[in-house]
Figure 1 (spheres, one colour):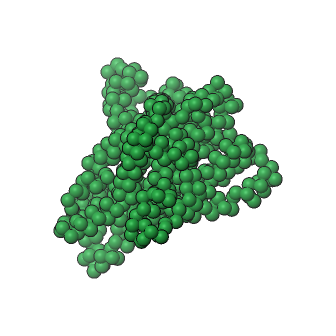
Figure 2 (cartoon, one colour):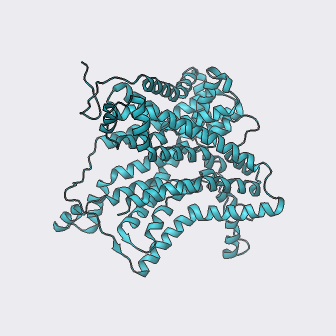
Figure 3 (tube, rainbow, N blue to C red):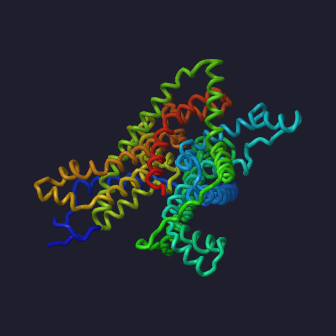
Length: 539
């Protein structure tokens, strides 16, 4: 008899591979690897002359801009995210519970909307220019944000600091005060306790947050394009859309994939070579220091500055511009159809992705089988495939393998599925790990079949993870811009595409209602998840 090799040592059933799920997992793996395979194929088919052209035209500037932007955003998000997390977890003040999740809300605002708001504010006659003239006189002028490196860093940092904030905050909540007390007994000062004990213990959370922020910068297309700053994602889109050069776009994609893979490897290597265990038996949380009215005022001022810059000014600007546009010409006639298109492809992608995730997550968590672990790694391939790269890869797939979906909304749905499937996979994988396999085994021992136990016992128990994964994929799909621009059929515009088109032509009053509607659809779902997570992790 063949003995099982399982994630859990005790199991009453003989090990076998579920045929249906194994085939489904193989299909998901192939689907996730196909875009990467086609990109590598086209890139390796390029000759020395093509690489020389790309090097002379793009690569040195793109490498400098992309890496420099990633490093600058990492530094700013490190300062913002860690300081906000420290204040929220180490001090007690009025409104702490609300601020805990309000500070994470910028994740619900697409970067291209934030970039659109800030660039328009600094145009002649914009809010920022008007404030400058009010404070500095009629001749006062602020520089435009187009192509300005500090402006791009500011926008992307405001959009991505919540990655660091959320992870560091969750880590600080679980900090054991006994380490600090032991160091204090030895005469270590507060500053050295922070530098030598607190920071090293929470370095995994800091590094994971910085990794997510930098990967987001590498993948961002909307903000850098609206602010006319050249990075790999913008160059890939221009190379494909402007010259229809698949080989050139694939070469740039390959370089960006290598950069993302190296960053992913470094982060994993740093995490695997380090240990940051905290004892459980003697665990005591760090009590928050109570703030008086002056301390509360200072903390609120800092929070209002960050929240106002990242979320408040964006919402206020969109509301004002929407009112101005509606008063002048009414609502855009096709706004409803744009919203329907966005909802249609996002709901379809989220539903299909969750359906495909279930077998991969189940097999990877229930069996320590190399084949199933390979399925899991393939399913996470979307993490190193930014939106433009997924768009290019899906375009190749539609042309060569699935020609019937070429030029239809099916290509957009497929791109969303490949791009955001890993986000849902994380939620479902965690949910499966929390359910003991003995419950399934008890159902099987009472006469249930494998599929009956899965449908009637396991899936109802992981329903919160399914809902969370669906919402994450849906929200990300609603915001996706580059893949939609590359793959959408003629006449099929989404809210994200219309925002891009209207702002590119400087019709800001027409873009504002679409942007406000997009945030209005995605923000409540995202805020609900954040509030739920915050309530579960507050000390």
